[in-house]
Length: 408
Image (spheres, rainbow, N blue to C red):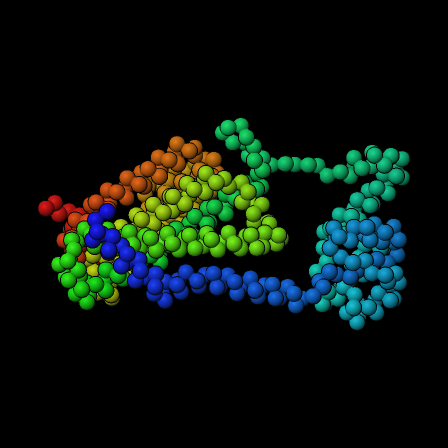
């Protein structure tokens, strides 16, 4: 690597890495997540015991069954067995519910400040108990009764191309999670770092520092040095989040919420994760190159948003498609867009993880993105060199179109 290029890369990287803005960008989401987690934890602790206390009146058999099932019902059966005492306790708000029975069924009476009671679970137990009693009246044995009340087991599985099967519910949750994650990550990184590289180029042009820089180095060194330096910042950002996420998982892996999330994403393999990360990095590089090309046309900082706007809009197309494409996997437009660079990073990984496409198709889409990156980077250096010292009053997109049409 040329010495001049290495100097520009290091300078670009260090200037931003040491800035408050960069660390505010990196730490803000982590701090926000930590605050939300702390508030949630604090609210949960301050709630104290939220297990509802329910009195079962007038049916000793049901009371015995519910006492044995307290953990599954997530409630505590009260020692109160009298309707009058239970009514007084409800009025004093020391009891959450009173379950009474008549010839037509059961009634659950609560008070305004009662903790939440799982009525569906109670209804299920009462239904099973009623069916058992009727089965005994009909002369059925306990084994026959158990077979009668046993719910029908329906299991959903997804058949893979290699004849393996995976849990259908788990696969659906994983697929949706990956669709959302890839779209959000790509859009967020693109918005953060395209604005960063555009602002850097605009600052140098508006302050006329660019003339001095190009007197010491070539435009190619400045062009590639800034792109690689900003890309290294984005990569550092992602690595920091990966480390933070890993540490958080190790610390809170026994937490119910974390365990549930880990279970839902258990269908995602290491190979696919590596593939998705590579695709995201290639996409980020593509957007940085495109932004560097467009930013070379700006005159000052007031035009930065005008330059970044079309790039952000392009990134949002893939982001929105990643949300609803899982519901229409065979749509011809979606199939085609899954191979289009700048969009494919939010679509092809999702099609791959949902088994709509095979690995060869996924590799082809990634290779197309890589080839497009190399061509665009090589083509863009010419536009950058011609316009980085040019100050035109024309609109940015008009200048870009003129540069593309120009052959000299």
